[in-house]
Length: 239
Image 1: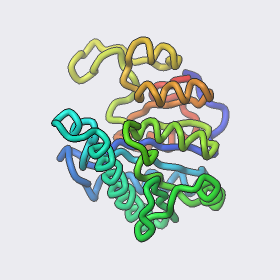
Image 2: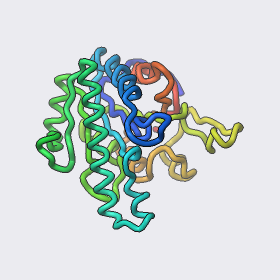
Image 3: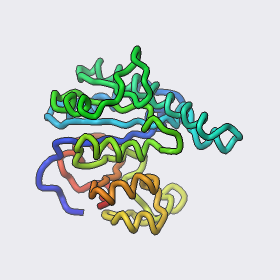
């Protein structure tokens, strides 16, 4: 994985809901939010235009509800609402850190967030506001990974940055297998053929069809977000 010659100018940051939960595994950890807002604030101050998609797994995961007997569509809509809760929490943390933000929701809820309008989102980015995209795509059966790929392409982001708890993509779980091999680079086809858990297959296919690169990196490593945005070769590049 070679170092990029220049920093990214517009990015889409994909955060899992679990990332906001910290060690508790559920709910929202205020300290995690504060640290995350500081990290995003640093790259925002450098002029990088930032879109964010947050998952909802720390509150409710649609697919898990469906496997427990719930109607899949109803479970997915509940999961979408969970992402809005996380989006509002992240907005509050960013605003307290002095970063201007907008939350745009794919499900209309005017008292809480703007409706998602592509041109308005791009205008916010151009005005250097962080745009947080909530409620997924607004449709059941689509994950927030797919939302991240879709919103990145709609807003002209140069890359999807997938923030995780590990420092890249491995051929097996590094927590269970000490001999797990980390990949520096992968092609989209390799990810699909190997069934690697980078993003779901729909998101990978969307990125592949539109040549949108994905970088998987460890969010817990201090300064990692700033380094990856600056073009440093860390994590795993899927292209």
